[in-house]
Length: 67
Image 1 (tube, rainbow, N blue to C red):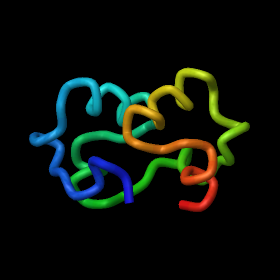
Image 2 (spheres, one colour):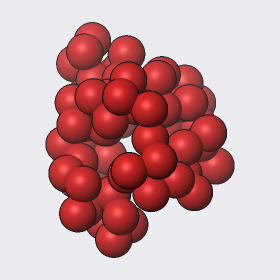
Image 3 (tube, one colour):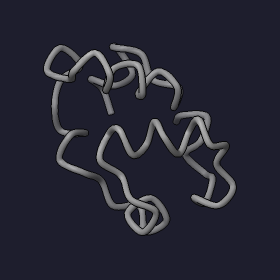
Image 4 (tube, rainbow, N blue to C red):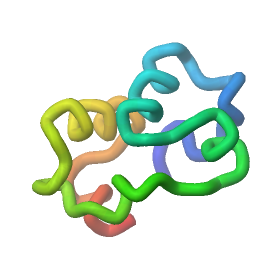
């Protein structure tokens, strides 16, 4: 579980919204618990920007790869 998993989009701080968007989320996807294709990638396949975005949302390499 990440630190923003139970938040609706409107409850997310701006930094978390920007991070989610960098990973391919839209407001509708986030609120409907839909996942963008990027979440199927392994950590090492993410760009540095996407890795930083994932960290903002509470992930590290281990938790990302096991989610």
